[in-house]
Amino acid sequence: MAGVRRAWFALGFSTEEAAGQGEPEPGPRRLEPGPGGIRRLWPAWSYVVVETGAGLEVRSAGLRQPLPGWAEALPSETHVVLRGAGSAGVWARAALRGGLRDPPAWSAALPPGPPRPLPLLPGGFATPRPPFFTALPAGLRARQLALGNEHVLLLAAGGEVFAWGSSRHGQLGHGTLESELEPRLVEALAGVPLQAVAAGGWHSASVSEGGDLYMWGWNESGQLALPSKALAEERAQAEDMGAGDTMLTPHEEQPAAEPAAFITIQAFPALLDLPQDLEVSRVSCGSRHTAVITRRARQLAMLHCGRWQMGAVSFAGGGELYTWGWGKYGQLGHEDDASSDQPRRVQFLVTEGLWAEEVVCGPWTTYVCVLEP
Image 1: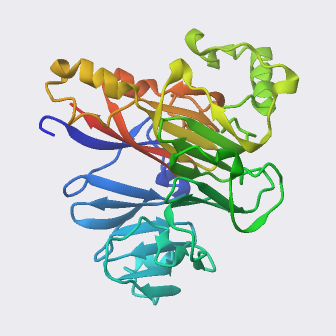
Image 2: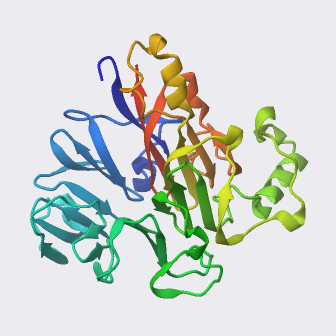
């Protein structure tokens, strides 16, 4: 892709804030690429594991620790799962600082063959918290698996979605608040060919092959992009205090929802209408916020390829970034700390002429990979 570079930006909570070391930079922060640039990353709350041309590396406030020999990570605040060519293991987070000299809390040899993305492993999946490994039913062929705080989503080989775990916030999508111990088909999505799933703290999302976005679960902070009573009350209070300048721009405003329309828990998948009928290519969920990349910019890049001086095929992955939900730490990228129950385009990328290619949400952070001309 001649003339184009990839770069990663972080929006929201920083490792410096987590460690109480100094003031974080305001607005989007460009991540230092390292040797060969950042290829992938996996965030926890206070640190992030990145893959560069030199391999995996743990980054947090005051720590840059290489992890040689490992290809993929799944971190949490207590443990980290690592997968290599022939093995996988789970270590306590403290072992990262010592270069994994401590023995793993769990490990397994892996058979040869192409790996599937973590947390999937042969016969089941790994988690960065006990019991560390869970077997899957033998007849369930998984393509992708996503972990929430208390629930699991599985995208099957045929495009179906299965969900299990806690459903006290409706995050399983089965229409009830009853927990499920075993994988259960999300019947409301049956017949819809799906290409991706994402799990937030207590909410869920799925993208169809046609680019439609379905969301369900907890909407306390507007993370489903459905009318939130808590946010409406916050906006009303801000207006009473003369802080109405934090509202949406005119083209993003919508009529105020009637009280009966407020949604705190959405127990069935809801088809989300994005602005201007945009299609979704990527989705990621944080603890209480959501981010998507749209496909519209792919069409724009094809129409304006002369401006970018590149072929449309090589630039087809780019799109625009939209975010919504909890925004206290600036993780929505709108240059404020306001929460939103409406999808809003991240204007910083538009202003800088950047196309979003990938998005990964940490609990209180949003990481976005962009294409730079």
